[in-house]
Length: 486
Image 1 (cartoon, rainbow, N blue to C red):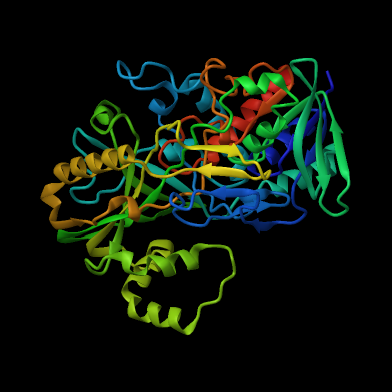
Image 2: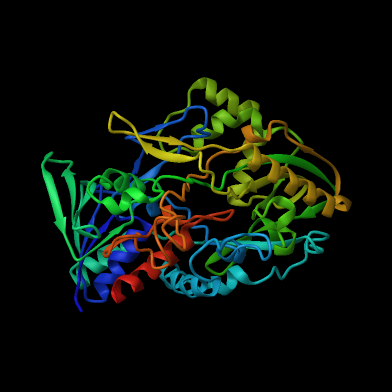
């Protein structure tokens, strides 16, 4: 049966959803905040200044953040979906890992184009020797992060669906709220035309929010008075991220070539391997999936001495460097080379290594997005003592497991100050088995509604330790199936 579908947000999830549903023969309207690929800084959000670790940029326009996404592909661990046997009191997702994996396979096909790689390349073990590091013992395993040679943007999918399947795109529209008829059915999405200032309404049989980890919960919070079913749900609560930072330096007992760990090049892609705990060891770190990447270094110098400048260099704000900044760069040229080497792989042979950690946060009811009286949104997110304690246990286990390979190592002090937001905030529309624990069910439909879905990073109750892009793409395809069957 042909349905009219309104997809709100033209990023990674929205682009996949809109193009897939249009190709299936549905009449799809894609509504987007911007009109061209461009960075978008937080606007109507007030971040707790004591909690924000670094500025980050989201994307607007066709393709959204996928236009700036570096394309690192990995999957959730099974324990992030099904929980840890005999430890978790409840499942972490309302479906099995095997069900999610089938969508991972489809998502790889969507984002890889004609490249010669697949999900099997992420799941395959390292096939080269790296001294003692390839003997991971009982505690650790190596997990791959795959980088395609060519980045993926959902913009190409959207443009193709416009040409072939009649996908309708409405740009420069900020959707403010959803309006329902009765208690469970959404009838229209209301917003503002940012060019004219006039009001816009979009009617459809099905509505899908894909406005991002913070954008979708903001729309739902704005709509709660109009939609009584939403008022009962924990919208905006339990925000998580997978913070990242350099937390130690170490000297190896002998010089090593870390290319197999650091940047193993294949045809059409590159693999980077990190150290993760085996599932039966996760209880030792409170059940969290952390991952550690080793980066070749020049010395034991603390990289925290140039953190301020590093933040300037990695943001999309177009800041130019002052003479003082340039002098700072010259002073810390060795640290700058380490950063450049990590990105471009100029040298792999090293006696020193830096430890780059991506760690998994668990849901915290104190971390949330809420409406303020002035119409903006307040966001409280940070790195808790429990987060740091789990990470410290993980590092202690790592050095105990590989002590024979290190001459000495230094874990930097004040570990929480070393960690930054990875910009993948999730959880504010979390998936759950029932409405008391979450906002959407296994089919990504909002509890208590008949025709409203959410499919983006906001639904991830547990987001794992690294890039969520492939998971978001998989969930978009899962949502597409649910809408087609609705």
